[in-house]
Amino acid sequence: MDELFHYIIAKYNYWASLVLLFIGLYGMIAKNNLMKKIIGMVIFQTAILLFFVSIGAKRGASVPIIKFTADKQPLLEATAYANPLPHVLILTAIVVGVATLGVALAILQKIQRVHGTIEEDEILEDQRS
Amino acid sequence: MKQLTFIILIVCALLMLKAAADLPDWADPASPASTHLSPDFLEQGYVETATPNIVTVVLADYRSYDTMFEAVVVFAAALIVMVILRHTPRKRGKTILYRPKREGRDTILQGAAQLIIPVMQIFALYVVGHGHYSPGGGFQGGVIFGASFILIALCFNLRFAIQRFREQGVLVCVAGGVLLYAAIGAICQVMGYNFLGYTGLASILGASDVMARSYGILAVEVGVGITVMSVMVSLYYDLASSGDLDEGL
Image (cartoon, rainbow over all chains, first blue to last red; front, side, top):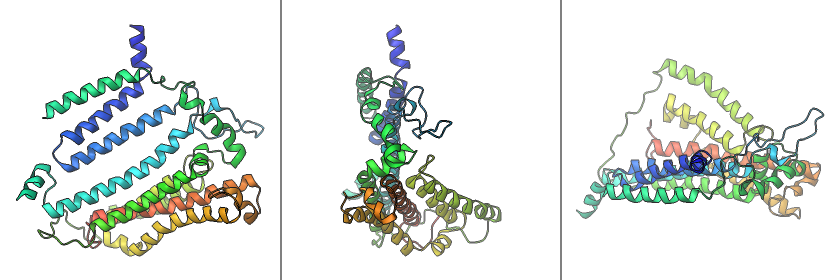
């Protein structure tokens, strides 16, 4: 029982990102509207970003900006700061995510312009006729 | 079909939860991610570059190749959106998905925007310039600056925003930011160091090796900021008007 409790409480960040991950994946697979599929993709992406950032957390640590002691000496102890690497990766990933979302929306507008709809089954019907 | 998807996904989720048992605990200081590379960054970053914000150091110095090609990805996305949406023959005529807003109607909205936008732009410049000492940098500052132009377009109308920041200017900024980044790297190479090895800037700037890396980070962040700002504006212009740039939200 104690072990199960530890499994749930000490790893709740994985639980949270896993729930978001599968909500996004379900949206991408099961929804018929292409806009909803894109929303599912964004939720999926956010889950991965949260997963990465949660890895960087460290107990008793502060943000990774070097602090200075009273006599102006930098405090250079790795245990005092959170891991900066996931933050860097996610910082670039967020902006690239926005750019790819822009491309997805552009393709969606093109589809709407050609087929007159963004429902998947209606597009397939339109292509057959 | 949907039920089948749902069941398969639940099974996958349970398998991944099982695998999560082997991952390190939340905020564990002894986790693999926090023990191999990051102590070196945290202990050597300030000594080697004189920049307290280690995220900025890793972004623009240790991993500067990565950041450069992220900027190229964003640049490519802006071009692709433009190429996809512009000048395409329409099969069914243009459907108006929105009613374009007329100019000069919303006094409160436009007055508030006029108050907020200069503050936003100065704050964006502060975020870029102060990225060495506080959370911030080129990506964040660029997004805030781009958001100020989007706010102009939303509160007035798209044509008004395009008069202020024309598309040619946007495209010059998109390419210029990436070029500034690559130029800094090329200057370092001409001076006999590696591509993006900022110590090559030391003799040009007349600074020590450590300070040259700090200045190099700043120059690169400005390049990233310009690219991200203009890409946000470019994406909005194209997506809000379906590529026509005449009338939009």
